[in-house]
Length: 160
Length: 160
Image 1: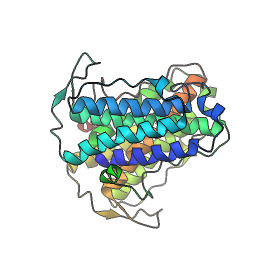
Image 2: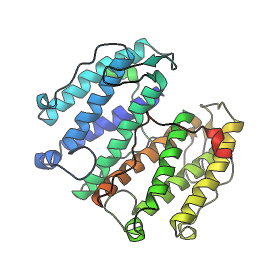
Image 3: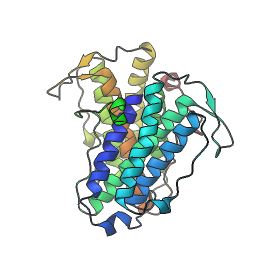
């Protein structure tokens, strides 16, 4: 399952780099469907993953304020910082009790760790699919979503 | 990992049912990005999953001709027929040698079974994300992509 995080992280980095080639006004423009804009979607992906993985670790939720990340550069840093903590957790815990129940602070019920990991994985893939439509709408080729044919970095590579 | 197929199949069924509430011309209209239309995207998801899972079973590829599925009803049937074969395979093979290498007829290199399963999973989630944008563009609420809060059917339920 961790391979799917590695996939998501690589695709996310490619989109963050892709954004550097796009005029800023396109990145912040509010679009139809999805969550607002290219910029907000990437923020949302990072924030949701971080919150749920902190919940799995039974750490207190640390709300991330969108207004603190007004540029693509600050979003790149946020992604790296959050991922460093998550990668450390994955490397330190190569196996999970997937059935263990977790109740995040913002939820009224509990969920198994396995369900939470699945939730976080599909959450990112789903929103990245949305970015690919918006990319074509502004006439630019989107990042490939293919899982195969990738030279995938491993979770431990993200500790560096 | 099979949970992610169960998730995809449930979400796909919800989209196929959603399509029944949408005027046919919207379902077949060629749209920007993604793969052509609502109808073609759902066909493509079904066909790609079926081809790869047949490859894992080392069965001969059976090309599925888009022209043979000109309606939503025929697509519903195709999805059910393909899924019955895939569900049977999963139920009969509760564990895989994920490292076993498979070379599908249409590829020049081989891939591990694990990578193929991951590929098929993210392929569907990605394209479903695209449908959700198009749904909003025609002013209709899309199917929820949330993994949690679902009463998930199991693979064996699809044998009935």
